[in-house]
Length: 293
Image 1 (cartoon, rainbow, N blue to C red):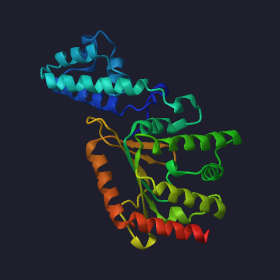
Image 2: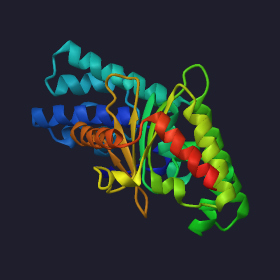
Image 3: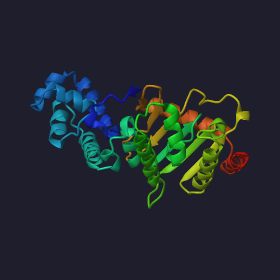
Image 4: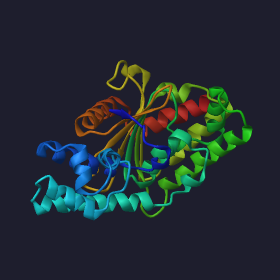
C-alpha cells in the first residue's frame, strides 16, 4: 500500500511504470547489484535508477536491454515482456487526456487518468453516491458542505469535471462499472430532497445502461465485509497490469498496487455484493426512496 507521492509532473497513470520498475528492482536485487552500479551500466545517475524503479519516468528500450544483460537476465521471453511493458507505459503517458488542461482536478488527476484508460471499475460507497454518477447539483452541494472552496467558479469547474468523466459510460467501448452503494448514501439528503430526488432519478437512468451494474446494500444486511470504508478497484486491458485499488482518506488518497492486497479487496467487494439486493430489487428501492423525497 502506498500514497501517491510522485512528483507533480508525473501524475499520469503509471500503474504499468510501477509494474516495470518493480520487475527491474527484483532483477537487480537477485543479481546483488547496487543502484549506483546499475546507473553506471547505462551511463546515468543513481537518481535515474530510483525514478525508473519507482515507475516515475518512461523507460527506453536500450536502457532496459543493458540493465537486463547487466543483471544476468538471458531469458529472451523475460526481456521481451519488460520491453512490451515499457512500450505500453510510454503510449499511456503520451495520451493527452482532457483532465491535464484543468487546474481543478488536483489530487484527482491520477485517478481520472486511470479511470480514462480502465476497462472495469468496481466501486463500494458507504456514505456518498459514486462520483462517476453525480449530477451537477449533488457535486455542488458536496463542495459547499466541504467548506474548502474559496471561489464559486471553482465549484462549477469541479461539477463540470464530474460531468466530463461520465462520457466514459457511453460510446463504442464504454467503461464497465459495478457499483455497490450502502442504503445510507441514498437516504442522506445531500443538497436537500429536491437534489436527492434528481440524483436518484439519475441513478435509475444509469442503471439501465448495459455496462452499469448497480446494487444497494440495505440496512437490514447488518454488519458486512466492507464496513471499514469506501474504495474503487480499477482494472485495465493489459495482461500485465494488476488491479489498482484507490481509497479516500481525510487528507488524501491511498493506493494499493500489489496482487495480494488488491485481491483481498476484490474478495471483500464480492462478499458485500452477495449481501446486497439484486439489481432489479435495488432499482425498486431507489425508486421508492425517490418517491419519498
